[in-house]
Image (cartoon, rainbow, N blue to C red):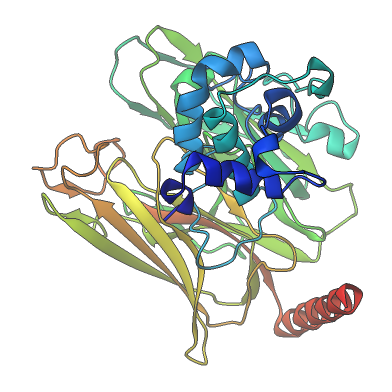
Length: 448
Protein backbone atom coordinates (compact mmCIF):
# COMPACT_ATOMS: atom_id res chain seq x y z
CA UNK A 1 0.00 0.00 0.00
CA UNK A 2 1.24 3.47 -0.83
CA UNK A 3 2.14 5.17 2.46
CA UNK A 4 1.48 8.59 0.96
CA UNK A 5 -2.21 7.92 1.46
CA UNK A 6 -1.68 8.00 5.21
CA UNK A 7 0.22 11.23 5.66
CA UNK A 8 -0.96 14.80 5.61
CA UNK A 9 0.10 17.66 3.39
CA UNK A 10 2.65 18.93 5.89
CA UNK A 11 4.36 15.54 6.09
CA UNK A 12 4.48 15.25 2.31
CA UNK A 13 6.04 18.70 1.97
CA UNK A 14 8.51 17.82 4.73
CA UNK A 15 9.49 14.63 2.91
CA UNK A 16 10.01 16.60 -0.30
CA UNK A 17 11.98 19.25 1.56
CA UNK A 18 14.36 16.64 2.90
CA UNK A 19 15.26 15.77 -0.68
CA UNK A 20 16.46 19.28 -1.45
CA UNK A 21 20.05 20.13 -0.47
CA UNK A 22 20.41 23.20 1.69
CA UNK A 23 16.72 23.51 2.51
CA UNK A 24 16.35 25.62 5.68
CA UNK A 25 12.99 24.25 6.82
CA UNK A 26 10.31 22.11 5.27
CA UNK A 27 7.88 25.04 5.40
CA UNK A 28 10.17 27.03 3.07
CA UNK A 29 10.02 24.36 0.39
CA UNK A 30 7.31 24.45 -2.25
CA UNK A 31 8.03 22.41 -5.37
CA UNK A 32 7.22 24.30 -8.55
CA UNK A 33 6.36 23.16 -12.05
CA UNK A 34 9.29 24.84 -13.77
CA UNK A 35 12.00 23.65 -11.39
CA UNK A 36 10.77 20.33 -10.01
CA UNK A 37 7.86 18.91 -12.00
CA UNK A 38 8.66 19.70 -15.63
CA UNK A 39 11.85 17.54 -15.53
CA UNK A 40 9.79 14.61 -14.23
CA UNK A 41 7.17 15.03 -16.93
CA UNK A 42 9.86 15.27 -19.60
CA UNK A 43 11.56 12.08 -18.41
CA UNK A 44 8.55 9.90 -17.68
CA UNK A 45 5.38 11.38 -19.22
CA UNK A 46 5.95 13.31 -22.44
CA UNK A 47 6.59 10.19 -24.51
CA UNK A 48 2.78 9.91 -24.59
CA UNK A 49 1.60 13.26 -23.18
CA UNK A 50 2.53 15.61 -26.00
CA UNK A 51 0.65 17.07 -28.99
CA UNK A 52 -0.52 14.53 -31.58
CA UNK A 53 0.49 11.56 -29.44
CA UNK A 54 -1.66 8.82 -27.91
CA UNK A 55 -2.43 10.49 -24.55
CA UNK A 56 -5.61 12.59 -24.17
CA UNK A 57 -3.71 15.74 -23.11
CA UNK A 58 -0.26 17.28 -23.35
CA UNK A 59 1.90 18.03 -20.29
CA UNK A 60 4.71 19.92 -22.02
CA UNK A 61 3.86 23.33 -20.56
CA UNK A 62 2.51 24.64 -17.26
CA UNK A 63 -0.60 25.96 -19.00
CA UNK A 64 -1.32 22.49 -20.39
CA UNK A 65 -0.61 20.64 -17.15
CA UNK A 66 -2.24 22.92 -14.55
CA UNK A 67 -5.92 22.08 -15.31
CA UNK A 68 -5.12 18.38 -14.79
CA UNK A 69 -3.23 18.80 -11.50
CA UNK A 70 -5.63 16.94 -9.21
CA UNK A 71 -6.15 14.15 -11.72
CA UNK A 72 -2.37 13.84 -12.11
CA UNK A 73 -1.99 13.63 -8.34
CA UNK A 74 -4.56 10.84 -8.05
CA UNK A 75 -3.09 8.77 -10.89
CA UNK A 76 0.50 9.24 -9.77
CA UNK A 77 -0.17 8.50 -6.10
CA UNK A 78 -2.03 5.30 -7.07
CA UNK A 79 0.87 4.36 -9.40
CA UNK A 80 -1.55 4.15 -12.32
CA UNK A 81 0.58 6.57 -14.32
CA UNK A 82 3.01 6.19 -15.90
CA UNK A 83 1.72 2.71 -16.77
CA UNK A 84 4.15 0.29 -15.11
CA UNK A 85 2.46 -2.57 -13.34
CA UNK A 86 5.30 -4.65 -11.92
CA UNK A 87 4.87 -5.20 -8.18
CA UNK A 88 7.81 -3.41 -6.53
CA UNK A 89 7.86 -5.72 -3.50
CA UNK A 90 8.75 -9.02 -5.17
CA UNK A 91 10.92 -10.34 -7.97
CA UNK A 92 13.47 -8.62 -10.19
CA UNK A 93 13.29 -4.81 -10.04
CA UNK A 94 15.92 -3.61 -12.53
CA UNK A 95 14.73 -3.07 -16.10
CA UNK A 96 16.19 -1.45 -19.19
CA UNK A 97 12.91 0.29 -20.01
CA UNK A 98 11.62 1.24 -16.54
CA UNK A 99 9.33 4.26 -16.93
CA UNK A 100 7.82 4.14 -13.44
CA UNK A 101 8.17 7.05 -11.04
CA UNK A 102 10.51 6.74 -8.09
CA UNK A 103 9.17 7.31 -4.57
CA UNK A 104 10.90 10.72 -4.55
CA UNK A 105 9.23 11.70 -7.84
CA UNK A 106 5.81 10.66 -6.56
CA UNK A 107 6.40 12.66 -3.38
CA UNK A 108 7.35 15.70 -5.47
CA UNK A 109 4.24 15.57 -7.66
CA UNK A 110 1.91 15.08 -4.68
CA UNK A 111 3.57 17.94 -2.77
CA UNK A 112 3.35 20.22 -5.82
CA UNK A 113 -0.39 19.69 -6.22
CA UNK A 114 -1.05 20.00 -2.49
CA UNK A 115 0.85 23.30 -2.48
CA UNK A 116 -1.53 24.69 -5.09
CA UNK A 117 0.42 23.58 -8.18
CA UNK A 118 2.58 26.74 -8.39
CA UNK A 119 4.26 27.56 -11.68
CA UNK A 120 7.57 28.88 -10.34
CA UNK A 121 10.25 31.01 -11.99
CA UNK A 122 10.18 30.73 -15.81
CA UNK A 123 14.00 30.83 -15.72
CA UNK A 124 13.97 27.42 -14.02
CA UNK A 125 12.10 25.78 -16.91
CA UNK A 126 14.31 23.20 -18.66
CA UNK A 127 14.73 23.35 -22.41
CA UNK A 128 11.92 21.64 -24.29
CA UNK A 129 12.65 18.02 -25.03
CA UNK A 130 12.79 17.22 -28.72
CA UNK A 131 10.73 14.18 -29.62
CA UNK A 132 10.94 12.33 -32.93
CA UNK A 133 7.90 12.16 -35.14
CA UNK A 134 5.73 9.14 -34.27
CA UNK A 135 6.05 7.94 -37.84
CA UNK A 136 9.84 7.75 -37.88
CA UNK A 137 11.85 4.61 -37.23
CA UNK A 138 13.22 5.04 -33.73
CA UNK A 139 15.95 2.41 -33.84
CA UNK A 140 17.47 3.57 -37.14
CA UNK A 141 19.75 6.26 -35.60
CA UNK A 142 21.23 3.64 -33.26
CA UNK A 143 22.76 1.96 -36.30
CA UNK A 144 23.57 5.13 -38.25
CA UNK A 145 20.67 4.55 -40.65
CA UNK A 146 17.65 6.46 -41.90
CA UNK A 147 15.38 3.41 -42.00
CA UNK A 148 15.39 -0.33 -41.30
CA UNK A 149 17.20 -2.68 -43.67
CA UNK A 150 13.92 -4.40 -44.49
CA UNK A 151 10.30 -3.21 -44.20
CA UNK A 152 7.49 -5.75 -44.49
CA UNK A 153 3.97 -4.32 -44.76
CA UNK A 154 0.66 -6.03 -44.10
CA UNK A 155 -2.06 -5.71 -46.70
CA UNK A 156 -4.51 -2.81 -46.05
CA UNK A 157 -7.51 -3.14 -43.76
CA UNK A 158 -10.43 -0.70 -43.56
CA UNK A 159 -12.19 -0.57 -40.20
CA UNK A 160 -15.59 1.09 -40.32
CA UNK A 161 -16.78 3.52 -37.64
CA UNK A 162 -18.66 1.62 -34.94
CA UNK A 163 -17.66 -1.80 -36.28
CA UNK A 164 -16.92 -4.68 -33.94
CA UNK A 165 -13.35 -5.78 -33.27
CA UNK A 166 -11.65 -7.54 -36.15
CA UNK A 167 -8.58 -9.76 -36.52
CA UNK A 168 -6.77 -9.38 -39.83
CA UNK A 169 -4.40 -12.25 -40.71
CA UNK A 170 -2.77 -11.70 -44.09
CA UNK A 171 0.39 -13.59 -45.11
CA UNK A 172 3.16 -11.57 -46.76
CA UNK A 173 6.46 -12.64 -48.33
CA UNK A 174 9.54 -11.12 -46.68
CA UNK A 175 11.59 -11.05 -49.90
CA UNK A 176 14.69 -12.31 -48.06
CA UNK A 177 16.97 -14.13 -50.56
CA UNK A 178 19.83 -15.22 -48.27
CA UNK A 179 20.19 -16.08 -44.57
CA UNK A 180 20.39 -12.90 -42.47
CA UNK A 181 20.70 -12.40 -38.73
CA UNK A 182 18.42 -9.83 -37.09
CA UNK A 183 19.65 -7.47 -34.34
CA UNK A 184 16.55 -5.28 -33.88
CA UNK A 185 12.85 -5.22 -34.79
CA UNK A 186 10.22 -2.48 -34.81
CA UNK A 187 6.51 -2.72 -35.55
CA UNK A 188 4.24 0.29 -35.97
CA UNK A 189 0.84 1.20 -37.42
CA UNK A 190 1.35 2.80 -40.82
CA UNK A 191 -0.35 6.11 -39.96
CA UNK A 192 -1.16 8.24 -36.93
CA UNK A 193 -4.87 7.45 -37.35
CA UNK A 194 -3.96 3.78 -37.53
CA UNK A 195 -2.78 3.99 -33.93
CA UNK A 196 -6.39 4.68 -32.90
CA UNK A 197 -7.61 1.31 -34.13
CA UNK A 198 -4.59 -1.02 -33.83
CA UNK A 199 -4.75 -2.70 -30.43
CA UNK A 200 -1.93 -5.14 -31.10
CA UNK A 201 -0.13 -6.77 -34.01
CA UNK A 202 1.67 -10.10 -34.00
CA UNK A 203 4.22 -10.98 -36.68
CA UNK A 204 5.03 -14.68 -36.94
CA UNK A 205 8.02 -15.74 -39.01
CA UNK A 206 7.26 -18.77 -41.17
CA UNK A 207 10.27 -20.52 -42.66
CA UNK A 208 11.87 -23.95 -42.95
CA UNK A 209 14.14 -23.71 -39.91
CA UNK A 210 14.78 -27.09 -38.25
CA UNK A 211 16.15 -25.38 -35.12
CA UNK A 212 12.80 -23.69 -34.31
CA UNK A 213 10.15 -25.98 -32.77
CA UNK A 214 6.60 -25.94 -34.00
CA UNK A 215 4.57 -23.31 -32.11
CA UNK A 216 0.84 -23.80 -31.44
CA UNK A 217 -1.33 -20.86 -32.39
CA UNK A 218 -4.22 -19.46 -30.36
CA UNK A 219 -6.68 -21.86 -31.97
CA UNK A 220 -4.72 -24.98 -31.09
CA UNK A 221 -3.38 -25.48 -34.60
CA UNK A 222 0.25 -25.27 -35.67
CA UNK A 223 2.22 -22.88 -37.85
CA UNK A 224 4.78 -25.34 -39.25
CA UNK A 225 8.32 -24.21 -38.39
CA UNK A 226 7.02 -20.77 -37.40
CA UNK A 227 8.53 -18.68 -34.64
CA UNK A 228 6.89 -15.60 -33.17
CA UNK A 229 8.99 -12.74 -34.50
CA UNK A 230 7.52 -9.91 -32.45
CA UNK A 231 4.30 -8.75 -30.84
CA UNK A 232 3.49 -5.02 -30.80
CA UNK A 233 0.92 -3.36 -28.55
CA UNK A 234 0.27 0.06 -27.07
CA UNK A 235 3.19 0.80 -24.76
CA UNK A 236 5.69 -1.31 -26.70
CA UNK A 237 8.02 0.05 -29.36
CA UNK A 238 10.28 -2.74 -30.51
CA UNK A 239 13.00 -5.19 -29.53
CA UNK A 240 16.75 -4.68 -29.46
CA UNK A 241 18.72 -7.91 -29.24
CA UNK A 242 21.46 -8.03 -26.63
CA UNK A 243 25.00 -7.95 -28.05
CA UNK A 244 26.02 -11.17 -29.81
CA UNK A 245 22.45 -12.51 -29.99
CA UNK A 246 19.82 -12.37 -32.70
CA UNK A 247 17.09 -14.04 -34.76
CA UNK A 248 17.67 -15.75 -38.09
CA UNK A 249 15.64 -15.02 -41.24
CA UNK A 250 15.91 -17.50 -44.11
CA UNK A 251 15.20 -17.30 -47.86
CA UNK A 252 11.57 -17.88 -48.77
CA UNK A 253 10.32 -16.78 -45.36
CA UNK A 254 6.92 -15.20 -44.85
CA UNK A 255 5.29 -13.06 -42.18
CA UNK A 256 1.97 -14.35 -40.86
CA UNK A 257 0.24 -11.28 -39.48
CA UNK A 258 -2.31 -11.38 -36.64
CA UNK A 259 -3.61 -7.81 -36.21
CA UNK A 260 -6.35 -6.82 -33.76
CA UNK A 261 -8.33 -3.76 -34.91
CA UNK A 262 -10.94 -1.97 -32.79
CA UNK A 263 -13.43 0.86 -33.26
CA UNK A 264 -11.81 4.26 -33.85
CA UNK A 265 -14.99 6.30 -34.26
CA UNK A 266 -14.46 6.87 -38.00
CA UNK A 267 -13.63 4.91 -41.14
CA UNK A 268 -9.88 4.24 -41.08
CA UNK A 269 -7.78 2.32 -43.58
CA UNK A 270 -4.36 1.29 -42.40
CA UNK A 271 -1.49 -1.15 -42.64
CA UNK A 272 1.08 -2.35 -40.11
CA UNK A 273 4.78 -2.06 -40.87
CA UNK A 274 7.52 -4.40 -39.66
CA UNK A 275 11.02 -2.86 -39.66
CA UNK A 276 13.96 -5.28 -39.51
CA UNK A 277 17.60 -4.36 -38.78
CA UNK A 278 20.23 -6.89 -39.84
CA UNK A 279 23.69 -7.59 -38.56
CA UNK A 280 26.28 -6.72 -41.24
CA UNK A 281 26.78 -9.52 -43.76
CA UNK A 282 29.25 -12.05 -42.50
CA UNK A 283 28.67 -11.10 -38.85
CA UNK A 284 26.91 -13.97 -37.12
CA UNK A 285 25.86 -13.63 -33.46
CA UNK A 286 26.73 -16.45 -31.11
CA UNK A 287 23.29 -16.87 -29.55
CA UNK A 288 19.83 -17.33 -31.04
CA UNK A 289 16.90 -15.58 -29.37
CA UNK A 290 13.31 -16.86 -29.47
CA UNK A 291 10.08 -15.14 -28.43
CA UNK A 292 7.88 -17.73 -26.76
CA UNK A 293 4.19 -17.81 -25.90
CA UNK A 294 4.03 -19.25 -22.36
CA UNK A 295 1.10 -20.01 -20.11
CA UNK A 296 -2.40 -21.14 -21.09
CA UNK A 297 -2.01 -20.82 -24.86
CA UNK A 298 -5.11 -22.49 -26.30
CA UNK A 299 -8.84 -22.97 -25.95
CA UNK A 300 -8.52 -25.64 -23.28
CA UNK A 301 -6.53 -23.51 -20.87
CA UNK A 302 -8.96 -20.80 -19.74
CA UNK A 303 -12.21 -21.58 -17.91
CA UNK A 304 -13.58 -18.76 -15.72
CA UNK A 305 -17.02 -19.18 -14.08
CA UNK A 306 -19.22 -16.16 -13.29
CA UNK A 307 -18.56 -14.05 -10.19
CA UNK A 308 -15.21 -15.54 -9.21
CA UNK A 309 -11.54 -14.66 -9.12
CA UNK A 310 -9.69 -17.59 -10.62
CA UNK A 311 -6.06 -18.56 -11.17
CA UNK A 312 -4.90 -20.29 -14.35
CA UNK A 313 -1.45 -21.85 -14.77
CA UNK A 314 0.77 -22.96 -17.62
CA UNK A 315 4.27 -24.46 -17.74
CA UNK A 316 7.16 -24.17 -20.20
CA UNK A 317 10.25 -26.42 -20.07
CA UNK A 318 13.56 -24.94 -21.23
CA UNK A 319 15.16 -27.56 -23.48
CA UNK A 320 18.49 -25.70 -23.33
CA UNK A 321 20.18 -23.33 -20.91
CA UNK A 322 19.37 -19.70 -21.53
CA UNK A 323 18.83 -16.14 -20.42
CA UNK A 324 15.29 -14.81 -19.97
CA UNK A 325 15.28 -11.36 -21.57
CA UNK A 326 11.79 -10.03 -20.95
CA UNK A 327 8.30 -10.68 -19.60
CA UNK A 328 5.06 -9.36 -21.12
CA UNK A 329 1.71 -10.49 -19.66
CA UNK A 330 -1.24 -10.77 -22.01
CA UNK A 331 -4.85 -10.94 -20.80
CA UNK A 332 -8.08 -9.11 -21.58
CA UNK A 333 -10.67 -7.19 -19.55
CA UNK A 334 -10.88 -9.68 -16.67
CA UNK A 335 -7.09 -9.82 -16.35
CA UNK A 336 -6.05 -9.01 -12.78
CA UNK A 337 -2.46 -10.19 -12.23
CA UNK A 338 0.25 -12.47 -13.61
CA UNK A 339 3.47 -13.96 -12.27
CA UNK A 340 6.42 -15.78 -13.81
CA UNK A 341 8.38 -18.23 -11.65
CA UNK A 342 11.44 -20.33 -12.43
CA UNK A 343 11.60 -23.87 -11.04
CA UNK A 344 15.17 -25.10 -11.51
CA UNK A 345 16.16 -28.79 -11.80
CA UNK A 346 17.42 -28.80 -8.20
CA UNK A 347 13.90 -28.00 -7.00
CA UNK A 348 14.35 -24.35 -6.12
CA UNK A 349 11.61 -21.86 -7.03
CA UNK A 350 12.22 -18.16 -7.70
CA UNK A 351 9.62 -15.50 -8.48
CA UNK A 352 11.07 -13.63 -11.45
CA UNK A 353 8.31 -11.06 -11.94
CA UNK A 354 4.82 -10.31 -10.68
CA UNK A 355 2.41 -7.87 -12.33
CA UNK A 356 -0.07 -7.21 -9.55
CA UNK A 357 -2.33 -4.68 -11.30
CA UNK A 358 -2.68 -5.70 -14.93
CA UNK A 359 -4.36 -3.12 -17.19
CA UNK A 360 -5.70 -4.24 -20.56
CA UNK A 361 -5.09 -0.77 -22.02
CA UNK A 362 -1.32 -1.19 -21.63
CA UNK A 363 0.75 -4.17 -22.70
CA UNK A 364 4.15 -3.48 -21.20
CA UNK A 365 7.12 -5.65 -22.01
CA UNK A 366 9.44 -5.64 -18.98
CA UNK A 367 13.01 -5.94 -20.30
CA UNK A 368 15.44 -7.09 -17.63
CA UNK A 369 18.65 -5.14 -17.05
CA UNK A 370 21.87 -6.81 -18.18
CA UNK A 371 23.13 -8.08 -14.82
CA UNK A 372 19.79 -9.32 -13.48
CA UNK A 373 18.25 -11.07 -16.51
CA UNK A 374 17.71 -14.64 -15.24
CA UNK A 375 20.39 -17.13 -16.32
CA UNK A 376 18.75 -20.55 -16.08
CA UNK A 377 19.97 -24.11 -16.63
CA UNK A 378 18.57 -26.66 -19.05
CA UNK A 379 15.45 -28.29 -17.65
CA UNK A 380 14.19 -25.19 -15.84
CA UNK A 381 10.39 -24.93 -15.79
CA UNK A 382 8.93 -21.45 -16.28
CA UNK A 383 5.57 -21.31 -14.50
CA UNK A 384 3.07 -18.65 -15.64
CA UNK A 385 0.16 -17.96 -13.30
CA UNK A 386 -2.65 -15.66 -14.43
CA UNK A 387 -5.44 -14.34 -12.20
CA UNK A 388 -8.76 -13.20 -13.69
CA UNK A 389 -11.38 -11.17 -11.82
CA UNK A 390 -14.81 -12.00 -13.22
CA UNK A 391 -16.70 -10.17 -10.47
CA UNK A 392 -18.53 -6.85 -10.21
CA UNK A 393 -15.55 -5.47 -8.26
CA UNK A 394 -13.64 -5.36 -11.54
CA UNK A 395 -14.70 -2.06 -13.12
CA UNK A 396 -13.48 -3.18 -16.55
CA UNK A 397 -15.63 -6.31 -16.48
CA UNK A 398 -18.40 -6.06 -19.11
CA UNK A 399 -20.55 -8.74 -17.43
CA UNK A 400 -19.64 -10.67 -14.26
CA UNK A 401 -22.61 -13.02 -14.68
CA UNK A 402 -21.31 -14.90 -17.74
CA UNK A 403 -18.83 -17.74 -18.16
CA UNK A 404 -15.63 -16.66 -19.92
CA UNK A 405 -13.39 -18.87 -22.03
CA UNK A 406 -10.38 -18.50 -24.29
CA UNK A 407 -10.84 -16.39 -27.42
CA UNK A 408 -9.64 -13.52 -29.59
CA UNK A 409 -12.45 -11.11 -28.76
CA UNK A 410 -11.84 -8.51 -26.06
CA UNK A 411 -14.79 -9.95 -24.10
CA UNK A 412 -13.12 -13.39 -24.20
CA UNK A 413 -9.94 -14.10 -22.25
CA UNK A 414 -6.32 -15.14 -22.61
CA UNK A 415 -3.74 -16.13 -20.00
CA UNK A 416 -0.28 -16.16 -21.51
CA UNK A 417 2.94 -14.20 -21.47
CA UNK A 418 5.35 -13.26 -24.25
CA UNK A 419 8.81 -14.25 -23.02
CA UNK A 420 12.07 -13.68 -24.94
CA UNK A 421 14.73 -16.33 -24.29
CA UNK A 422 18.33 -16.34 -25.55
CA UNK A 423 19.56 -19.93 -25.66
CA UNK A 424 23.14 -21.03 -24.99
CA UNK A 425 25.21 -24.12 -24.20
CA UNK A 426 25.90 -25.29 -20.66
CA UNK A 427 29.56 -24.06 -20.81
CA UNK A 428 28.37 -20.68 -22.08
CA UNK A 429 25.87 -20.44 -19.23
CA UNK A 430 28.66 -21.06 -16.72
CA UNK A 431 30.82 -18.44 -18.42
CA UNK A 432 27.98 -15.91 -18.26
CA UNK A 433 27.41 -16.65 -14.57
CA UNK A 434 31.12 -16.32 -13.79
CA UNK A 435 31.37 -13.04 -15.69
CA UNK A 436 28.34 -11.64 -13.85
CA UNK A 437 29.80 -12.68 -10.50
CA UNK A 438 33.09 -10.97 -11.34
CA UNK A 439 31.32 -7.75 -12.33
CA UNK A 440 29.31 -7.83 -9.12
CA UNK A 441 32.49 -8.23 -7.08
CA UNK A 442 34.15 -5.26 -8.77
CA UNK A 443 31.06 -3.13 -8.16
CA UNK A 444 31.08 -3.99 -4.46
CA UNK A 445 34.76 -3.09 -4.18
CA UNK A 446 34.13 0.27 -5.84
CA UNK A 447 31.32 1.04 -3.39
CA UNK A 448 33.49 0.31 -0.35
